[in-house]
Length: 210
Image (cartoon, rainbow, N blue to C red; front, side, top):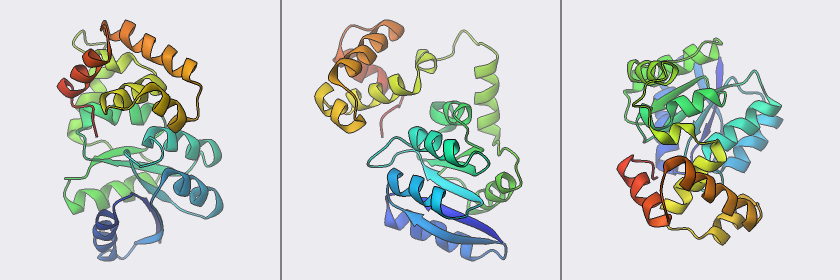
């Protein structure tokens, strides 16, 4: 039996995932987490085969949660779930240690296949994800500039674009305001932008918001 931990802050989404897995003979939902902190703690204290991890959690960025889980449970397979299409976050998630990336609009059968595949120690690569990964590895000149950002810089970009102040970002990430200012400066330099308004427009244009 494949034991699955679902980490998603939306009760309706968790219920839907549980219904899909309940129709299989070899998959069982062995735990549920509403926050990144809960997911990290449960993954460390209990035994799971696969974590279904939402990339947008209320307390922590999904990529950060993924990294924390892999530090304590390096062999645990993590399948990222998101409303965002593959080209936006999939490559970043795979580089951070995810076993696969699945859009929430995917068919139930695709979800079941993905869980079984990653639980066996393999990567789950959809056709769209394979294309995104190939473009990333090819060094395509058309590769978006935000692919060059570190995970923290990328997270800061999304938070600025959501309207949060540097002090609010500092508090949420438990980092000093000076550190956040450094991330912002790097963002502006790497993306060749001038101010927060430019960062927000960039994020909207590239569909990087929640």
